[in-house]
Image (cartoon, rainbow, N blue to C red):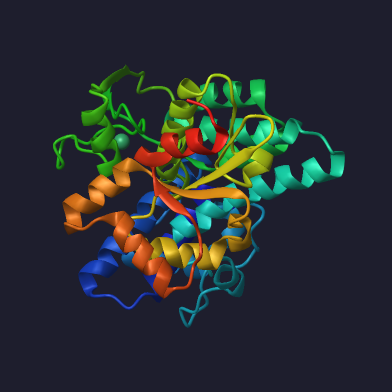
Length: 361
Ligand SMILES: [Zn+2]
């Protein structure tokens, strides 16, 4: 499933299955109808529902392959008892659409790893790195430009997966104000042009101005789906800033982003000793600890090797502002309680640490 299909499937499933108040039900049905309308108009189909009762009727009678695509069964979304189709139940096991979309990135990683080991060709290490950089640098883009850019760099399989991460975006303005950190158009109607806390931190620190982008509303644009934005682009900001800082500081050392197809986030080597860094940008120490236990191979942080967990400065600052506490102290306490034995440090102490270990300055 691509991001657009995932959004629609979750909207329809939530509308039917979630126990909500009437006003929430109406909100969910509107969301499903909007997404359905977009998807069907793009396919030149105009029998889309326009209200709740039409939506329910549509879901009961129209077979999914006609509006969701040929990969879907030729069966309705729900039966006459309003029970959701088995195939959909199987496909929506992730908590929400963001978590489901994020799996496309995991698929890309697995695919590059597989090809790397099959062909023993380090090209796939390069392709993975470039794919991740591309996504992080491309929030909003004209659809044809996306395709042109992708075809000039990537293999067909990677192209398909990156395309799957984007959803169509209707734009009516000719001038957009873009966040200089993440690339997302800023919404001035209700938030006075603010973006995420991470973006705010770098806008102030690096004195960045908003970017004005002139666009042609007649052209088709796509934007990164929310799940990829939240789970890939935003965490990458800290990783890439730290990587760039190390490249600028240690010109004689080999600094690599996502070495060995994402075994770590950054490695830095003088030829004899290699230091590996994992940058983790979680809102709070307990969610970081939980994620480490669930998803990471903790043994890779072997204390005999030089493997460090790095917390970006922006996270420590944001945590202090919101909780009046020191992130690093809290993290150490959490690690002790959870019996996680990993060496962690804050970004601001990283350069000194590397200089000590590698004997450079
Ligand atoms: Zn931003």
